[in-house]
Length: 149
Picture 1 (cartoon, helix red, strand yellow):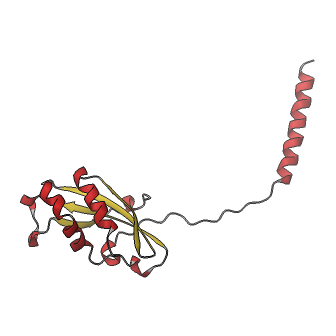
Picture 2 (tube, helix red, strand yellow; picture 1 turned 90 degrees about the vertical axis):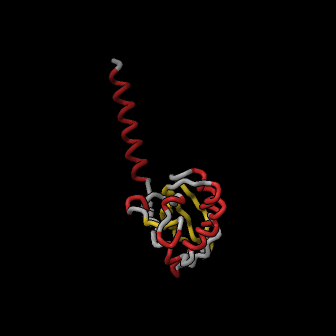
Picture 3 (cartoon, helix red, strand yellow; picture 1 turned 120 degrees about the vertical axis):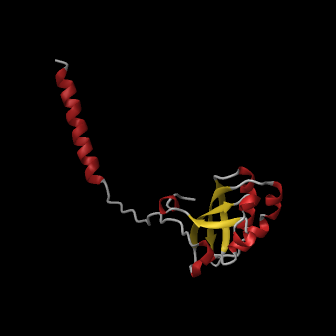
């Protein structure tokens, strides 16, 4: 006897679900997939190496560590925004973020928003490269450049 009300209720639910499905309207969502960050930072910011080296002078005087720091930033209409530094010696990150924030970048001639990602290799005084530079810019591997800012 208890099965009859259960079947009746199930039938009503199925009819109600079919009516609701008929009332649904089609919705289309359009969007652009997240493109990887550009890794050609020297093209967009031609003086990046010299600017970073100069801005990092005080940090170099305090720290004698080497390391590899990942840097990501966004250029929006020619202005550098949302700078993030990760990895490498923690002591260098704030100085790198300030230095990148003050870069003069043209954004590769594109208007709107463009993300960039690169690595900064910092050399300890005993490891100085030819020309006495303490910094070297490196491209991020492509799989790392896909990560969002």
